[in-house]
Every structure is written in C-alpha cells, then in structure tokens.
Length: 193
Image (cartoon, rainbow, N blue to C red; front, side):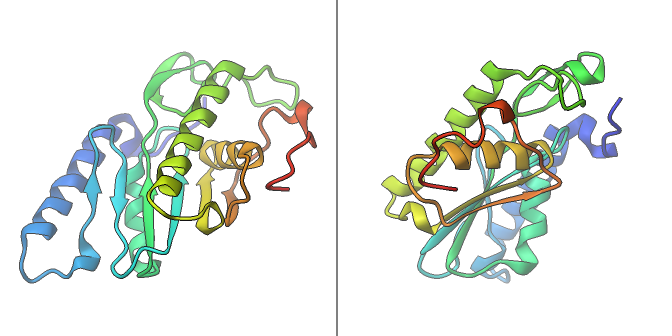
C-alpha cells in the first residue's frame, strides 16, 4: 500500500474546511484581497491575482490529496500578478491501493517500470488539463504565460499534458513526478520539449 496523509481519507472535508476559511476571509473587511480564494463545486481552489492578471499557475496534487492543501502552500510565495489554480481530482478506485477509493487523477496499476498504465484515465485527465489551459488562453492569458505543474501523480500528469499541449507553455514543473506513457517518448512533441 502507498501510505496516505491523515487528511487524505477526507479530502472533501479538508476542501470544505479551506472553503469555509476562504469565505470568512472574503467577508472580513480587515482582510486584504490577497487572502481571498474561491472554491468551485468540484473542489478546485482558485487564488486570483491581486493586481493585473498576467500569468497563471495550474498545480495538480498527488494521490489522496486535494487542491486546497496546495493553494495554502502557494499563498506565502505567490506573485501578485499570477492566478493560481489548484484542481482537485475525482474520487476513484485505485488498484495499487487494493481498490480503495480516493482522490486520483487516474488509476495506478503498479509501481514497477514495466507496470501497465491506465491509458484511458491518463488520456481523460490530460484532456481536462488541456481544457483548463484553453480556458486561461480564452480569458486572455497567452499559453507561454501559463505554468502547469504538480506533485507526484499530479507532477506526472503535468509532464504528460505539458508535452502534449500544442502551444508553447511558460513552463512545466514536477515535484517527485515520473513519466507517464513513457514508451511514446520522446515522441513528436514540438511545442514543449
């Protein structure tokens, strides 16, 4: 089994707790705009830019976590011209963890280099990353001002989606990540090599 953080079993509770904190902050006159965040119905946490929105960071959490925890981590280090988007994965059965249901971007079938991969799940998650990037581009942020990153399985997803995105991105970041669909690499990914 992969050991999960204590809060992982109740990611929705953590998300709900962060949302209620965000709501208190947004209604308090003593708090500045820099403390505000928005939580969407799907658990995505958005920290808006304090000043003119010039760039976006989209950050994907690891197995069993949720977007709210990473949004909290970004607050002390944020740039006032950058919007931070921290999506939350849907809850699904994870084969590696004996089928237990937890937040995961795709199923993990094994940890060995030769383990089969959940190609359909990875493709669906990648499509969702691309849709979120496309939303930012449609809102006026050029793709080369968007960074996609993540931790662990979220970092792996960021690498996979970043390589396959058709426009040049501002960056791809991965902390403790790994390569998905590695048999297809190096591939013909011209925009983000």
